[in-house]
Image (cartoon, rainbow, N blue to C red):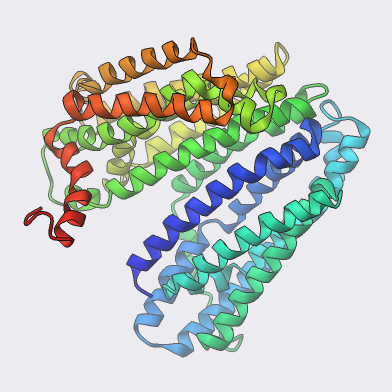
Length: 512
């Protein structure tokens, strides 16, 4: 299976995951209620940290398996599968033991934020969720082997199908009154089935049977050489994105409902990040080659502006539309009782927007092997984040958490990282931001003003139809003004080139 098909399946998977979550979440919130939904997300936040136990070994597995596959060395593949199976089995056992310790201490950890009955529910949910994590870790060698052989139809296709089945079964479980325990049980069952398919496929289709005879543990050197700074940044990223719910559960009294509200805002923020990651991933594949060509500072600057403008055009539009109509969306999607999630999302989306718009700078630093300092900065941001949130929760649980998160993200992504790009890469901040904002900001301001004017017509009383019309008008005005005044020739070509190719294929135009 070629990589082009893999890219297509990746996009389809992203679409299915976002759509299924968007459609399922309102039903889940209304069925569970704010408090139970908050506890459900609290447990998922805790378990997300267990994935760090992989320690980046997955990348090494894919690299080695790809190498042995290219050499058509089946014996080496089987031997290597034996090593990785042992490794991941040990990691799974460690995760299970840590899970038991955490579960035992849940009453002490969340005695301030949760009631006795809520802690009991959290313990039951945690027991199911940790089993899910253990199964995933224990079979990681097989899922990575499939990726290494680029059999994307199996890996991505199975995930797509099981994601849809998981949502459908979760709806059935909720309809039967099984609540959050039923949902996590469905997650566990679908994980077991998915991983079982992977194991069977690797053993019987790829003919890679783990061999435990004369195995070599040399690959552990690869783990030892794995960049500790990249691992630190990964940990910092998890802290910044997942720690708020945990801190609320630990330090805010009666926090289950607040966690539920905050989780809704955080979920919208995650959708925003997904869009940003999609664009940066598509636009940045040539940066390593750029660094290897030893370009001038001006070349780096132009590249950052070129990519930054495209990312900013899209994410800034999303932020402006959400600024105007985001509260209407949350009321329609999650219910009016969760309207405060709007504050969580809109505030945290702002520094995230600029972080992704400047993301080319971080990618360049990685290509230059200058990623140590950014990793240290991210860790510092995570520590500041935790300290501020703990302090501000005592003032106001929800808004204090939002402010603490915003301040740490603002200082890291919008101040310190920007200054570091200036020093390490040599960009001129006035030129960079001037180039990124040229033409885009006036169009954003115009569409935002029109959006606020539309609110006077109170189309939100027509529900989803009014919401779609409002957003559609804003997007249309932005799109037209950008095409007429905001975009340069390169950006217009990105928009029109796919259409020209289609017209060329149907012989409407002769040249692209």
